[in-house]
Length: 390
Image (cartoon, rainbow, N blue to C red):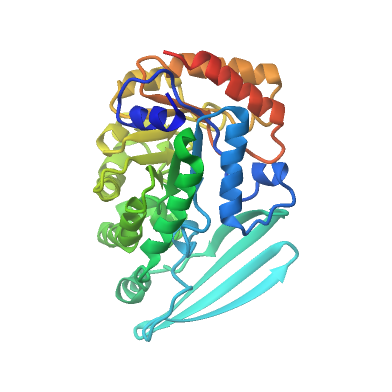
């Protein structure tokens, strides 16, 4: 069975020869920068090819998650409103300043109803490795949200054709060795957190429920066209961020105030039959049961302590095959900072639990950090393959 068949049959809940064993590698910087220090950090197709090449070299089942070059303009994933496109009712003035390795972009958006301001920063942690962050959110009060609803530009004409072209090129490159995923815009709560301050968002559903409802609907509406275009691109799976409403909110709050919006968005993701994978890389145990009602095909990555709180054996019990579990080995404390023996031990333990009952994938919990020893990654793949058989 080849890697592509193994992934697709696993997504469909069908029997395979073994669990897929894959490596999460970011398609810009981080571990890629370590392996290819001279690569052009803005040649996204080349970088995505290198993600595939690394997994092939190590014998893993290939899973490339396309972000850069597809999710463009980056505001739909990295934060803020659209400052790339303009119209008669959406005029943007952006000034940029550089301080050392930090590029700050401050934008003022003029609309017929009033102005909006936002600030984003890109920090170059090392050559080719960037941290993207919205440092001033555009929605300070409800009237700002009303301006977005009225005037923010929709998905540009032809955007879907460009996304499809890029995905098809990657699928041809990957071939039967694995699958091509695309980072769809985040789930609504994550997306809302890119528009409004976190501290306000975490209380808004209690303090101003009508305002919250309006925000959450807009956080979904503004990304629906992009999501449908990504689903129609030929991607094998849509990766959806769901970490901001993490387990620390608690099951009751999540179920009442977050789940209904997330569920509706996931339904949009899967209208064309493309499986959606929900990403919560933090605390998860409070929500393992709730995720049964999301409608997703896959949930990831069940990060073990201290990065997360996953008790994998207990989670497998709760899930009981209701969705595919992508089970992660700690990419920092084990893969980056552990010994080869630490890696082998953690990988074996994770694989032995994950494969019980099938419907699981083995992978690094999150993308590999710069400074992760190659020998540790090789040990992870070798051990994973050794114990992944059913």
